[in-house]
Length: 153
Image (tube, rainbow, N blue to C red; front, side, top):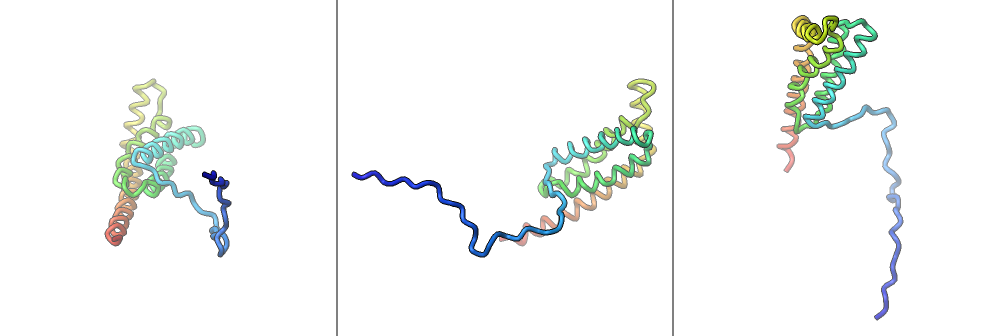
């Protein structure tokens, strides 16, 4: 019985109508984070921004609060649709974690902890505002996602 001739791998051919056109403008990243990934992102971002605030602005709590708002927006945008409701939960934890570099830690650990509690009490407006922004964004995204799922067969 003759042995069948072996063929090599098929060459990759371009489609007949040419390659798909790539978008010409610059696009923003579109990551899709899990609930845990979104929480880790916002905690790491706030720790980094808190350290930068302590270095550049001398531990300004106003600057820290302003920097918290874009982290809230990015977290609400980058969490994948299935984990949307976890994004607003992680934000207050990230705000508190990022206060450690900003808080006055001249009296050791307890002094630093007291500075974190003072920061949470005096900067609650930024905390509530950022969490509210993220919550509204998450609810809008969730409603749109549920409606899109209902339309599919």
